[in-house]
Image (spheres, one colour):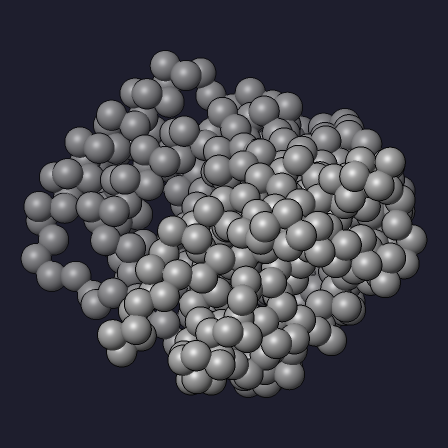
Length: 506
């Protein structure tokens, strides 16, 4: 179903039609750049302090449970990922702008309650299906009823006196078709096209009333199903759980997303915990806590009965073969790797270090570098041979990876020298990380064909911060190397920092 030329002309002529905010337009442009970098994302988000604060809050929220809190925007972006940060920032920006609209016949509270609840459900469903684009599903779910706002502002009297049917989404859609020849999903897709949004988001909005996604093909099918089902889930929560409604939800989630009925009951418990988070992020009260508890209890009861009625269930969702793009990424990744250990190589390290130094200077966050040397490695090679030496290097690489974060860069610099790049990490934390690695490596006894060996590391740490504002990559590398030399001169098997070097020289 498409928007007619007459309606499109009417929409374009409406001066109070919802518009894309300036920050939103910038984010849409950035999101279409395949080579986007953290610094540009940080710059866009930090241009709106309230938006930056929300990104920090969601990175530390229950939606992204992390062992370590993000203490700056750089760390928050690492936790969320570049695309997720842009998508969530766009969500917050749009909602803030669209909430300023003046409703005419529209029940504004009901509209936002469904939109935000659907977005929360959509992200949960996408995560449950192991999708990598859960945040984009979140945005599409949030915008799936955008056409209602556009129609409320541009078609006079469309929702006047229609308060009853606004509580029934199917009846609302039929009312729109009777009055203007299409529903708000088609209008929302038209509006996203006017805003130059990516095609997959427009498609998801256009088919948001079709949970089976019968008119969608290829990779977009699962995306559209998550979006369409989010609205069904939101309606079930808002209207109250019934036997008939939960049967429909159970059948839909099983047939379209392969989510078993028993698991669906667990998801209702998860969503009850996430609703307060969504309310806090969007600064809007969705439900009274006591009502949420009642809905959850009723959902458990109905789903338990429903689960007992299910005789057979479809097989577990199978992962599809990786696309050509992923294969190409793997080939590019191989060129960045050391062939023996699988760690990043020196060339990639220096490239990553140059970018981190620039970001450190631009955004005033610390960056640390650790030089690691295997003590007496030449003696190991001379005594036991190069095969054992290579095995030692591989074991050392494994120890370094297990002791660092996914966002850290661990590289083999050459021979028995390794380097760890720790973005957004001050000297105190960097030293703590390195001391754990040093202790862990020194307490492992290796057994290679009956040859029992214990190897120890010497580690030198340097940090670019306000005290030591290293400008060049070579300066930071030299400082870490000096710290490594100090660690060796003090007896090896220990950690020294560039600050230790400075104090010793004073």
